[in-house]
Image (cartoon, rainbow over all chains, first blue to last red; front, side, top):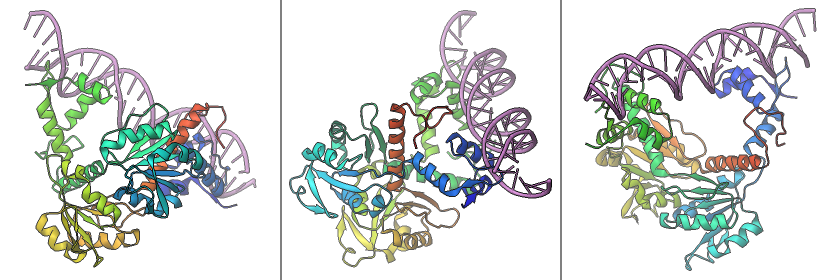
Length: 199
Length: 199
DNA sequence: TAGATTGTTAATCGATTAACAATC
DNA sequence: TAGATTGTTAATCGATTAACAATC
């Protein structure tokens, strides 16, 4: 039975070993005094907490460039998020095949969600359609939405939305870059200093 | 001169007003006692800190579905991240036009970076090419990289990398969903209770 | 001047971690 | 038993916030 100590895990995770023990303990994951934690047990329990031991069937709505990119991204399926259905409203797209899947009309959403057990909807439509699509997704009973719109979506309580906004990601990136550049020049934004500040 | 109190800002931000005053103060953003903070001044100063008052020219590398989606996303330019150049290595793609830009061969990267003042490279290539492209990007002198690969990239110190992994985003989404569902059932992962835990 | 609000001190709160009894 | 390591208590550290003097 392979085991691992809180010290080893803490080093790998870059945290204090007491914190790691406390955290595992709060998740009701226990070890054996004098021995350590059973590796398989920890993996399995953390998998349960994270929901990794479960499949989450995905529908992608909007078969533009982004939707196609998602449909073709094999990494999703490998990580437990198989893309099982594609939807669009354009007549020219409905019925065509993308990444081995036939594009369906959005009207079919409720039936397909029910049939395939869709748990996650990825909204990859133009921004002006996103809220309307979100409403349809919620009505169809899908409990989780990933969206790429800059604006946040309105959904009823209990529906979980996550937003990935590429402009925001670039914002964060450029913020760190700016800070790195400022630090090089000897400026410092985040501690109280008497020195100069850019601007 | 329109002004706003720390109390008003704190309410909007959902934080304590003393914390807000302390935070502004640590950014060297001051107000006037008895009056409040000058709205324009706060906006401008925060803009400086975030780097929002600056343009960050972007190059997209890899003109697949994801690259095309990025090239066509007008939201980037609106937020200060104009996509000025597209690169690929496929002969069939080089020279074609995408979103009004001519796709260039990756060989041209150093020259174009220099000419257009590219500050951010977005790597939208297949994962197996990502590290090699990152090396080229770094060699060309681009200080910031946004990548969509699951694996992290190796870059020298000073280069800032941000990774957007869609599988991870779905992971986070499903984690919250699972937690919401568990909470509905009366389970609780994150506080110490004597009650049952899923599993 | 009276009222309002900042900027900051000092108190409080919560999170981290050292330390060690329990125990394998 | 001796050595190792957990689980948790108690101390420490840092972050939040109440409170208030400064001052517009």
